[in-house]
Image (cartoon, rainbow, N blue to C red; front, side, top):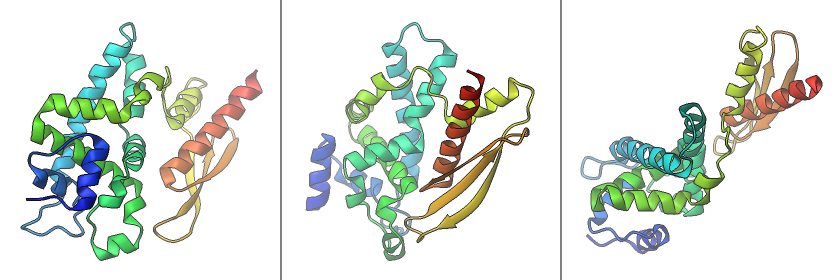
Length: 229
């Protein structure tokens, strides 16, 4: 088969020419438009997640030969989580070539973090099946680029860090509550509160519930640590 002009441009952006172009087409096909003759990218996503994980684990070990497992694990999580995959997808304009059903397209599917992250993992798997692990590894290292070297030495997410701070002082885990959601489905805004058992709380707003929770946790942790200095 011959790729459409937009997919030819996309494969140029990621630096891989597909010998089996049907793999790329499948990688960008969402379940909302899939048919028995045109399967979606979910199985590829499953494989791509594992390929990405192995590449990142090897890269982190090579980047810091003295790091402990406790230091490597949070860095790994920061590099393979959905937010990171979606950010890479945006950099190569993956959303522009996603094949979506009309309802998903109308609801802003090309910008949705989960769809972008899943499709990015599917593209990694497609390269792996097309040309082998070394080609997929080269793709990941090329697209993730400076992220590997610049990932914070302690990349624990804010919710984990706040929970560890609370537990270290004999407190129960922080409680999170969704205070509100505004905006259209394709561009929602979530407001979330995080509260400690001692009463201290912070509120934050973001485009996803998880991001809002992270922002609230980050703000509360910074305040509590600042109060102790």
